[in-house]
Length: 392
Ligand code: GLU
Image (cartoon, rainbow, N blue to C red; front, side, top):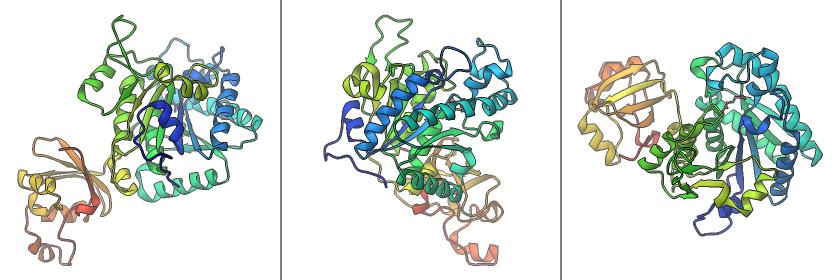
């Protein structure tokens, strides 16, 4: 179902990207969802979004919505004062608020999409569905099934049950994960910022808006760090991280100011005024390796020596002989992080052994493995085909 751009050229503006996109994930920030009152949905804005989405769908584009707002719309019922920032709300309060607000939010989408003859489906995901390969495939099939029927999935994190350690915490990241899972070509993050500026535009009158970022460099990350976080959970820093993860996986990401009604139409008309585009990097990686790369909580860590590092750079597998240390609790087939002796993460891999058997063979030659384990296993701890390296 993944789709190629209609033109053979590399698209280079948000207009072109949006025009060429065949499979789009649109993330909507909390501030856009809320109406004038704390527990009110901005129905009119939502209706204009649904109309724009319907127009895209008529042109054959598949659209998935990832929406925040569950917590925001439940704050009033929980008595959480308006001046407390999302990050300062206690976890159990957030979870309870989302149980109230998620209903209102989805109901808003359901009604807005119904008006244009589209069915909306509520999908609540937790990190485990996206990090566990089997669950990931299952969630993907569910989404494909909905999309094939012309139904728009409206996804949020299942905040009521996600516990602190296993939360995504912000939907910028969740939307990229969803895009990677379903192999979408573009992620559009709608919030209240026009994208990336050279400095904080509220503090520095000379700050310049950057409409197109061909490749994310350190300077861009720094610019994001100095920008105002806004009212959302993620802020600009999380948006840049989301952009890094998306573009590395071959997905373009657009950060846009979504305040206007009919925002998709407005964006097609004036992309440079309203948004920053982070261009997709070429990615030859398969869906499985992109899934592996985007893991937030690997089950273990393997620290390798310089010889192994060189071998990996040359496209070789990771052999037990080059491994210095193993940490974590992992089974065969789990995703583990690969680190250098200096502690730098250089990639991710799928372990051919569980932690106990892997620990027994570190530093040993592959020829000794069978004797140590008493069975003939793989020569490699991580096979080349089960590994994805960062740019090293
Ligand atoms: N899942 C949260 C909610 O629905 C939002 C997280 C975020 O703001 O990114 O309220």
